[in-house]
Image (cartoon, rainbow, N blue to C red; front, side, top):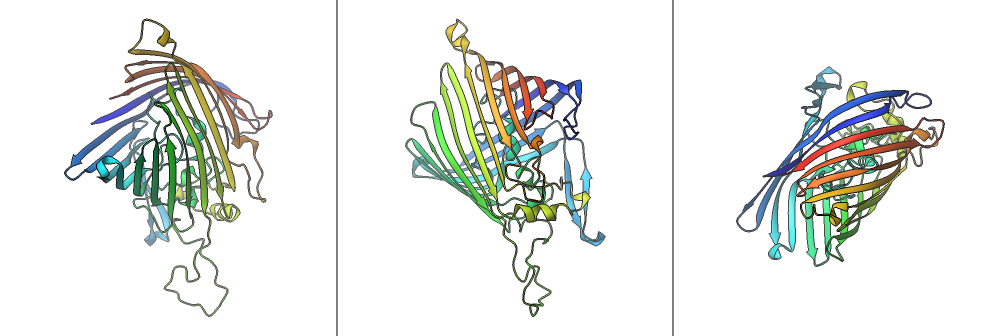
Amino acid sequence: MSGYGELQFSWLDHGPDPTREGGSRSDSRLVFDQTRFVIELEGEFPYEIEFGAEVEFEHGGTGTAMEIEYEEFGEFDTEIGKGGEVLLEELYLGKGFGGGKYRLRAGRLYVAVGLLPDYHKPTQYLGSARPESESTLLPAVWSEMGAEFRANLGIFELTAQVVNGLDSTGFSSQRWVASGQQTRFEFIRASDLAGVLRADARPLEGVLVGASAYYGNTTRNRPSADLAKQCADPSITNKRDVAPCGYISAPLLIIDAHAAVDLAPVRARAAVIWGHLNNAELISSKNRVLSNKLGVLRSEVAEQALAAWGELGVDIAHFTSLQPHHRVEPFVRVEYYDTMLNPPDTSFDNPRFETQLVSGGVGYALHDTITAKLDWTHRRHGTDAIASENTVRMGLGFVF
């Protein structure tokens, strides 16, 4: 058994409502958070068969469950528990081949897009929180149901996945497609599947470079068939068919390039993520009239979105007698993301959704198992008319 945990203590110089004209009001707030506690289980069976499971407790709570009450005219019913969530991030069976060179897994898996699937533990990134840019555009850390084939070919590792697609009712201006992950209902709809291809290379010990691509449709996993095509031929009258003329297509493409360097005393991480959503304008028009009880933002979604981030740290304990069990690491991080890079023609390109962040701080780690970090983040938006924001955050974490 293994796992990790994180706690955060933050001071913010701005109020909680960023939607006001001119941005959040000036304020002085303290926010404490039981960010997450994760338990990981792994086991082996004969014939190179393995299993894995990962349960995450976020913000110390239990969360909500939602279902469609068809007997109440198709309205949505939500059962609310204590604030926060308990998530089953991974649950899979796997089989190794060729002495561990090849591996096939099926179940709930991390989606192989971006850098966070491999660098999401508190000792694996430099800031006191995960990069905001990547975790805004994409679910963080993104996992879905499906199957995976992975091949380890020397310095190269190739990954291919087929997973359930996203639900476009959750797409929004604020988080683009990230809230399309299916977490609101008891069952996962997989009428639309998605494919993922990823290639990573490790040319040197401690150096990783790679890229990935995600592609899948997003319309058939909506809770109701509100994106079915209208039949041009009036003779088609099969009322038993949900969509006799098929569904409107709205495929989603996400491409990322990423790199990580761990060459003492230097550590660095970087990723660029770009995405394109077809038929974004039609999805936006349908989402505007969704039921309030569905619990989605019902805002415009853009055709394109972009995120980029990078961080660099230098271990100064490397030059002192504290080595080898301690690490004292000043670092900087820069981020940029725009969730409304190319909005529909019918919507306003709100500069609030274009964000730039600069962070700086210092982290301490003991045996790469216990970490404490202190950093400051300055956030700016796409216009000077929106007030900038500052956050000072202390993070505590451990890995076991």
